[in-house]
Length: 256
DNA sequence: ATGGTTGCTTAGCAA
Image (cartoon, rainbow, N blue to C red; front, top):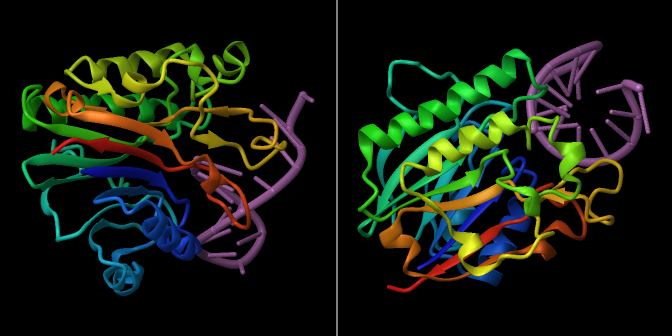
């Protein structure tokens, strides 16, 4: 199984790029984030023509997540269903062949100390709560998406400068650690240990040309699934050319 | 130092 995750930063403006990506990389399952679209304006038809069915949790203007697969995934989670009644479309889980796959869009958090920052930390605690209630570390499961947190120094172009921001603040890193301590492995790090491999570069300040990026998009898998991973890559080329998303896709191949 | 860019929606917000 080839799994991909990609923050497309608007599904409608990125549709041609997404279709070309699907044709080039031929993933079996794709988790998308930041659709910025309601389900009613989601491009089901062109994706179906490309060979993909879609499960969508949409939202007007902001957020929105989806899971694409060759046959319609069986939905097993839409939000955390923990009574918090999150109005933001950030979490969708599905069963695909005996594996649970979730498309995850962790809040950015804006500024450390802000209301959005508190929401980010609460949301990540909610994600751990969902895992505790609805999943188990011994069943095959992958959380895939934009976690808006870089795990360690290798994942940040300038760790000292970024440690005061929402993407690499110690509290955000601890919140991510609490999620992974459920029993999840950062699959990319099973295959690459070096520093300087990023998935996101700011549109501003020539972030990509200077490779001033962060690795904030992740595939976090339970042991039985992580053990089956044979390779992981960042499709850096997808950040190049006309109208790229600010995120590159992450691809993981699993043995069957 | 609060710059710079992109997308959605139309002046301002979110990232």
